[in-house]
Structures are given as C-alpha cells and as structure tokens.
Image (cartoon, rainbow, N blue to C red; front, side, top):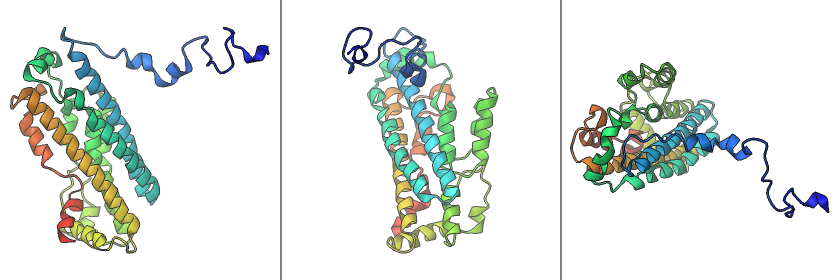
Length: 282
C-alpha cells in the first residue's frame, strides 16, 4: 500500500506538491517573471490595470504575429489548409485582444489624467510587435522603424518584416499560381510600401466570389477567413478610437501623436481592400 501514498500520507490522487526547485508550471510559464513586470510610476491605483492590460495586449500581438507568419509561410508553400488553421486560430485571438479594451473602455479624463504623465513620451504606436502585425496586413511604412533605431534587435526584426511579403501579398501570389489573372505589377510591387488597391485584383475577387462553388472553393473560403480577420482588425481600431476619445477627447496623444485624429484616419481604412469592394460587383 505504501506506493499509493505520497509523503504526506494522502492518497495517490493527490498531485505531487514537493519539488526540489521551482515548479514545472513555473519553469514553463515563467509566471513569476510575468507577474513582476509591473513597475508603476504613479500612486494612482488605476495605473495597475492600464499597465497590465497593455502588457496583455503585447502578448496577444505576439501570438497573432506568430499565427499570421505561419499562415503566410503556408500560403507560400501552397499548404492552404495549414494557413486556414492558423488564420482561424488568430480569429479567436483577435477576439480576445479586442476584449482587452474592456477594462479601459470607460476611463474618464480625470481617471486617465491621474497617471497619464507617468507614460512620458510612451505611446502605443511605438509598439514593435503591433507594427509587425500592421506590416503583415500590408500596412507598410519605413518611417515606423525610426522609433526603434536604438534597439538593434527589434529594429532588425522590423526591417526584415518590412521587406517581406505581407499575408495579402502571399494570398495574391497563391491566386496567381492557381491561374487567376493577378496583374504582374501587383506581384512584383515594392514590398516595403503600403499595399494600394488594384482594380484588376478587385476583378479577380469578384469573379471568384461570383461562383463560390466553382473550381476555387478553397480560395473562396480563404477570402472569407481573411475578411473575418479584416473585420476584427477594424473593430480593434474602432474600439481603440472610442476608448481614446472617451479618456482624452481630442487632445494630443501621448508621444506627440495626433491622438483621436490619427486614430480616426486609421479606423476608416480596410485591410485587404478588394475583398470588401468586390462585394459591390457580385
């Protein structure tokens, strides 16, 4: 019977509680590191939720970048099911990311002002991982590397992402390999520039959507999951806009950004634009 008892004499269904060092959970999750990364800069109790929520957003950015890079690589290798799986996972992750606004969504100006000065020149547009997300969506801009010149590793990762095909670039290359008439000017465009809508690409999606059960059913499904991604990105931008508008009105943003004005411009832009405009012609 002795083998059925642990050191405390409890039954064998009791988990092992005695470890020589840190627990295996800690070794894997690094919870002690994560829960000691909150270095507050004000005495306001509301700063903690702002800081932790922002850190949680950064973790979701990291996961989503991983999923979209996985999807882009799979599309490059003509493994559409693998790409679809990664994109579908990212939808659930985007929903969780968007839900991160809830703890901050009802901040009043007085509540935000209580610790706003602690941010100094810090601003969300300086997030390197969010910038990688934007680059994967085709929202390229070399000027957005400038804030990261003092961090060689981060700058190098962003420079690499700037020069690589976006998720949409890989999608259009896949469509071309499948025999659809994606123009050569789109396929050979300068990848370091923001993607600009193309009437020819719109026509490709229009034809593809006009016959969803035709010979390109898998591409139709790919278009739909990319549209799901684009919709959730749009919701993220709008939730950001609303939360900012509520907390600080039209004042200049942290870090000298244009604040609400800049966010309003972002909120009007659709990623994967022809997937939206083609619907008017089907």
